[in-house]
Each structure stands twice: as structure tokens, then as C-alpha cells.
Length: 165
Image (cartoon, rainbow, N blue to C red; front, top):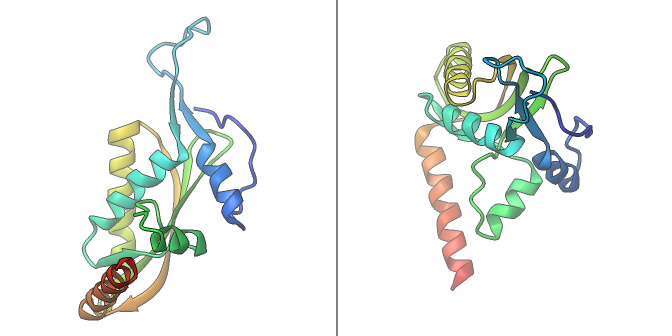
């Protein structure tokens, strides 16, 4: 796998994020070492980010993902952003570094959640893409009770509905 184009690693603006979405990760055919082959398999960063986000949401005590301002704006216009809170970077040796921002449940042991996220994300990415994870960086953005989180989600939904009327 190779990175198709060189883009800045930092996502400082919405424009940078869109450029990063256009990047692709290419998985080299490990069974066929023939240099004359025209075959290739590539993944957009968005696909990898979506797999990571979905795997992270499967982990107990991860209540939600924390996105940047662009994700908030997209959600205000009705777009459900499944990759919210996730960015990926491809290393020089064609492995993936994953950055995840989450909201966890109050009272839960964060290091155990981190281990569960690492295990789940590594397993899902490997099983679905064959990509090797070079590292996972988990950032705890907030700690709330399940009740507080569900109430805030209900408030967002209710606000969105009233805005549409």
C-alpha cells in the first residue's frame, strides 16, 4: 500500500480535511510479487476512518465520538458523519496510524477502554482490509454519565426537528 499523494498531516481547516478524504491507501498484493501486474487494491482514508469509527462505537463504555468544527457544521445540515472523531495517517512503511477522539462513560476505567478500542480497531481493520495498524492514539474528550449523554443526544435531535419545522 502506498499513499497516492502528499498532503499535510494536520487537519487545520475543513479544506484540509476534504483533501485528506481524497487520499487513498493502497494494499500491495502480498500473494503476487510480480512487478508486471496491473492489479491493485486501494482504500480511501474515509473508508478506513469509517471502519475505525464503527469498531470504536462497538466498545462498551464508549458513548460517542467527538468531531471537529467541520463535523458539527455537517451535522447541523443533516449529514450523519460516521467518521466523526477519527483521522488516519499512512506511515512511510505503509501502515496506518489511527487517531480517535471519544466520549466515555463516567465511572469507567479509561485504560481498559483504551485496550478494548485498540483490540477492536486492530481486529476489524485487519479482517476487513488486511492493513496493519502502526499505532492507535485515543483521546478522551469528555466523561459523562450515560443518562447525560442520552439526554444531550435527545436535545440535539429535538433541536434539529424544531429547526426543520
